[in-house]
Amino acid sequence: MSHTGTLKRREYRLIIIALLLIVIFVSPYFILGENAHLRVHDNLDSNLAWYRILAESGQMLGSVDATIPQIINGHLQRGAFGTEFSGIVWLHALFPPMIAYGLSQFITRVFAFLGMYLLLKKHFITNQEWAWIRIGVSLAFALTPFWPSGMLSTLGMPLALWALLNIRAGERSWVNWLTLTLLSLYASIVLGFFFFISAMGILWVVDVIRGKGWNLRFLSALIYFTFIFMVVEYRLVYSFLFMDEPNSRDEYFHARLSFLRAVRLSLKNYVLGHNHVMSVHGLIILPVTLLSLNIVVLKKRWEQEKVFIFLHILNAVLSIWYAFWFYKGWIPLTERFHFLNTFNFARYHFLRPMVIYVLFAISLKILWEYRAGWKHACLFFLAAQLLFVASFNEEIVYRKKPSFQQFFAEKQFGDIKAYIGLPQENYRVASIGLHPAIAQFNGFYTLDTYNNFYPLSYKYQFREIIEKELEKDHKLREYFDEWGGRCYIFLDELGKHYMFKKNSKKEIKRMELNMQAFHDMGGRFIISSLPIKNAAENQLIHEKTFDSSESAWKIYLYRVSISQ
Image (cartoon, rainbow, N blue to C red):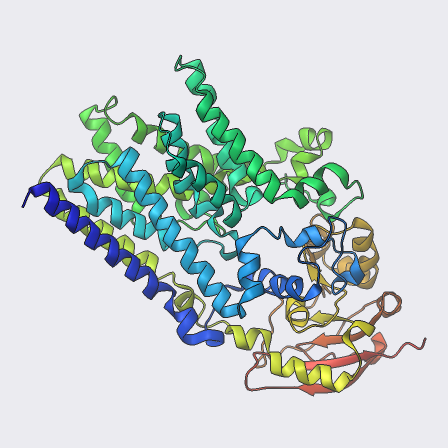
């Protein structure tokens, strides 16, 4: 039996073990079902409700100008819920929410692993003896706590890079083109791949400048990849090109940081990363990569490790770019070019997880080659990172938050629906002290919502309801007026807190809402997770309090007492 054959069989066994560990990692979603604990921010409070609303709206395949009647009086465009060509949309249309969520997690993590593994094996860590580096780093990358509804928008980048580098090198396999095609069905261009493709475009330009030729095959692949995304995201393209009605993004204002605060944010992002693309690298990977860089500098291995040094520079530049996108020095440009405010160009830092884990792999290789005594240290670093990233499993991180069942409280909201006794489309509600996504998930028609793309005219209309509360708190006023993605009933007493559970002792005592404006918009009921002590002053009547052992909330139902 040849030594090479033995190494290959060992590599196959490691791959199988890695895939089994991914299965174990996602198993709580299937074992616990609705008792599983999930991320709330930009997940339970929004996307998971949107998928159900879209599936039940009858507008899954609706026209580009169709609307979703259940939310903000039908002012929300169908396009705000994404394309019907997205795989995650169909998972939630075909399966119960937790099965769909678990399948999405499994699909994303498996292809994240395969993509990083193929990329490292073909282009960075090619020797057979380093299979453990390829597989271990790929597994760690696949277990990172990505933003769930982003799917493969960031974790799919290694797979796309593998295919594009193959094409760039002259490989003619149809597999590369199929990979690019299928990735567009399980990723978003605005949540990752716009930045990836434009970065690859820069690489093509650099190749031309360096005299490597025009490489029309590589350029064609980039054009094709972009075109496929444009077809998949045709609703987004339509809204960008043909919808001229002012929307909530038109008042988004991002450039407000001083120079020193931008510097601090650069360092924070460099060490800790970002909530939507958590690479979990600060404790182990960062010291390892810096140690390896020190070895390269001391040994003057500049020529041998040009890619490694470039990736270090790129990693730092991406953090600086992210932070300084919010630097107030942009104001003259944003005032002149409006799209600089409405499109978040800071997201080039979404490339960082891929960059960081490729750096980690190369760093382990450098340490392995440096001295014999470092080999055991490399194994320790990799094992430590795997344990560390595994500890970010949602069931561990969010175990003290409401479970899926407790969050959406379907039985409790079913009781509320039955108590009101009217068809849900005949009245509108709004929530206080809890996310409106909960009422939306349970079929209620809401005046409030969490969406970052809706008519500006509706934002102004809704603002009349909370105008006095915004006057009390400049932070809330700034938050609503200069973003407005959370079109919520904001109260000065509560601030930006939207999850008051049933054990809360908080009471609302000084609420000042314009209930006439609320009533004129069709609002008839307030769903509050806290008692409103001055309800009568706000023309509200307490109807009933609802509690359930399956719910995280105690719900106080108030009816508007304004006559027709």
